[in-house]
Length: 279
Ligand code: AMP
Image 1 (cartoon, protein in one colour):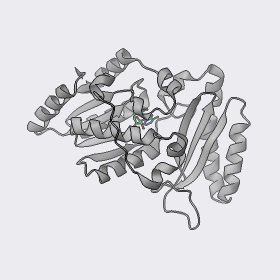
Image 2: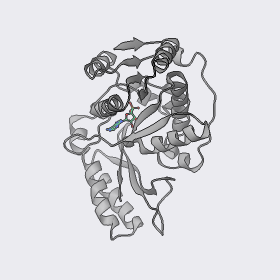
Image 3: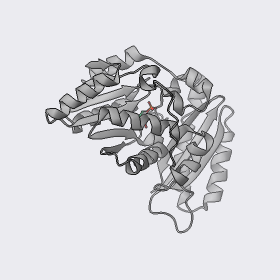
Image 4: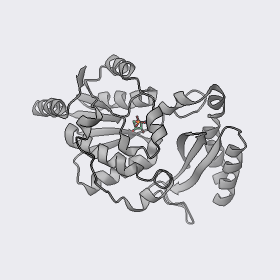
């Protein structure tokens, strides 16, 4: 597996690959890889001739400095995992290489950015869009793979691609969960054993809310979810929304064709997100 630290090396690699008629798949990550990330890489390997993964903890998308500082990092293990899958290349730049000077681009994603993660993490999606746009420019892949775990991010990236006319196919991949239902996340390693025991409740509450959606008004379901999460000593609900899966605006009457429930839960300083389609 090729390991690149500079943009020039990646541009050279991808230019050669495309010159030789190869289809290139791209999996952007922030490292601390788990089976959720690896599922994206495996799918990319099945659907492309060559696959490159990036590992870069993007400071621009962290609205909370403690979260950035405590974000798990284990490059050696990540490289071993990617190598074991026969991933072709990995791009792991230093911050100075990625941003010789800090970009001050401001995107406008309209209403999708005003709710949930966009509302509770101001500037987060602007930072995501800056790094993803830059990575897309460097890698020039045919396809890029993203997880539905970050569903709002996926919708933002689709909008970025449309706004900027980027020639790339965005492939969305299902959420990979632990056997007890907890959505895999790099941040899960920061849970204490007690928090880890409570955390699967997030997914179980989502599934029960989906059952209730068939009969109960949304307002009632939201109150029920809030009481369920907040009754667990170590968890605090940040938001729970039942939304139109296309616009991410609150679902109303008549219900949108595709409905998704999204949740963010805080365990002290740490926060986890999850989501579930309701139909
Ligand atoms: P991250 O390293 O957290 O920025 O995630 C990199 C990519 O992996 C994003 O597209 C995420 O949505 C995806 N991802 C993270 N966790 C999961 C999961 N549990 N299942 C599927 N995809 C995931």
